[in-house]
Image 1 (cartoon, rainbow, N blue to C red):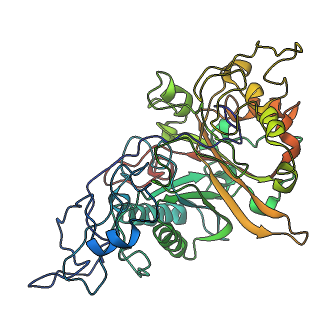
Image 2 (image 1 turned 180 degrees about the vertical axis):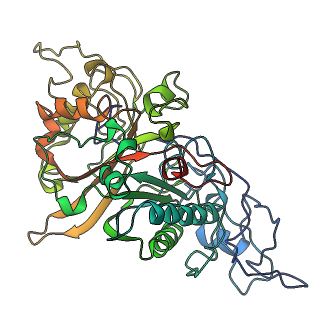
Image 3 (image 1 turned 90 degrees about the horizontal axis):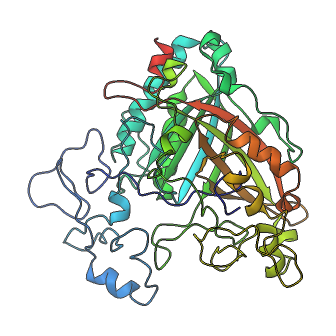
Length: 455
């Protein structure tokens, strides 16, 4: 699960978009009280002040860990206790903000987030294009407010009242069935045709596909949950929940320095993920601004797979056996042919017995782009754990999400090759699947999907 084209590999961290954010989530009707402000009070125009931490908090956490300056890139602190008179500003983790409006929707190139929710909806009986347009208008307005660290416009639950944006992103997509439900069959892109069957599939249809798909991610669990509840409430009578999956990643700042993520198998995972700095990144991941259909300009296609890891079987293997399955060292992600994590894998190198150092069926060998006609996709997943079964085995694995300009040239050829002889296949099971068209970002004053629904 370590190399760039694999349908089981998380994305390498990409620097998040950042914007100006206030020092706490503002209620729509709140107004600043006159006179001195107490802890947590905010007024419009407050700016975050990074790296400030109360003496009480400093003394209480000094012996815990020294990792607060890791991926977050600044000192980590929390709001001052109510008994303290001096307000303590948000930590940098809370004030980080992704932008709702832009060329592309948020949640594609931002760094992995600590918490996530994936949800799919089906339009309600009798709901069509008009109701769908009203729903996307509501959803877009809510996403814009919440990503800015503000409260929902109506009926806010106050769950995230004390938090900043926390890198919240909300992303919207359309499933194949959406177009027949809304009378827009002629606008359905051919790239949204159903995925082929794969031998590793054990799919639960009730947890697959859907008319509408929403991806929510944030670096705070309450902020992510708050967004989930707001999106569900906004659906109203226009759409009903089809399925929901909840995931997590390592929190920013949990390691001594920024590094590629690990999955639940303990492997460093996502080493060769494409980066926005790559010369061909946009053409591989996004449709051009003059793309076909026109409403998908600057958009992308998301493949979503719930991949269960058979951890009891995996953990019985020795570390050496696990490394042979993957083709990389478990400790640092370096290829078995030698070097460091980012060293190019030498597929021709042999050992003393003349056999390849990287086994022929190793996952990292099979998924290399040069072994798959250059197929590439950005993986941006979450791990999940949904308890244990009757046999005590953990129901855990990866909520795999990959982005590409064309799934038939990204996900499909790689997964077909994995089906033919990947050593990892006996330790994983694909249990749910979905493919969604994710249009480009909304311009100010627009809502996501407006060019489709009003074109």
